[in-house]
Amino acid sequence: MSSSGPWRARSASLSSGGAAEHAAVRASKYAAAPRALILAVGLWFTGAVVATAHAGSGPSTTRSTTRSTIDLPETPAQLVLDASWSAIEPVPSLESAGVGAEQLGPARIVTAFRHPAQRRPRQAAADLALVVLRFDSPNPLAWRTSTREAYFDRVEEDLLAACSDRDAAGSPMGRPTGSPTKTCRGLRRTKRKELTAAGVPALELQAKDRDGKTLLLRLLFFRTYTILAAAELPPRSRDGARVRKALASFAPPASWQR
Image (cartoon, rainbow, N blue to C red; front, side, top):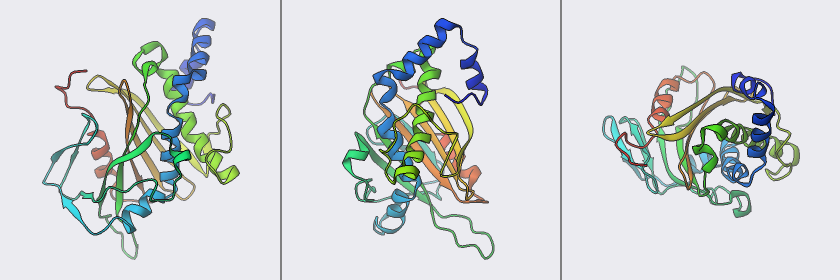
């Protein structure tokens, strides 16, 4: 595991017993569970799903009203979006973007939204896409404070490994986890935040690639499944604040009972 970042420093300072528990968490079957989900996100980051959303989803869209709370399918999580966002209908699928079932595992897109990018002078810009994916697998280690950090470490490692695998072997299945790189395809993690959203363990990740694109992720670890919202910003985007505000709203309602 990389030793960079404040959360890595905390891990390194664990007692020998705590370090052993940390290693056991990372090696457990539950810690391996997010891999198919993160693979799907890694594939999405290459542009497959974004291309599907922009070019192959059909012209039908549904406008949200100003600052609407959007109930999402298959989860109590919600998004609060302003009127500039529109739902992509039909919902794009990873399969339609050419991603095989053996790469997906039990991951799938449950909904997606687009937003017209603010263009700079003499700049061509495609619409932005916000995609919500779900992965059905239990998360007991995310719900225990003693194992949560190690579990989140594994999620971050798998994201980097998925990108590295695709670079090295032309396939996201080429290299096992356990020896993650800090960057992959020029992808560099720039921010990580651990939090809870209405009592649900959550993780925010931000990474930037060598071309200046920024990947934003917010993952919610429910007890029996993980669901995440993901968006990509082009270099020098004027939409960063709007997209981050949308992702920050991704959570169950405060009144939700666990």
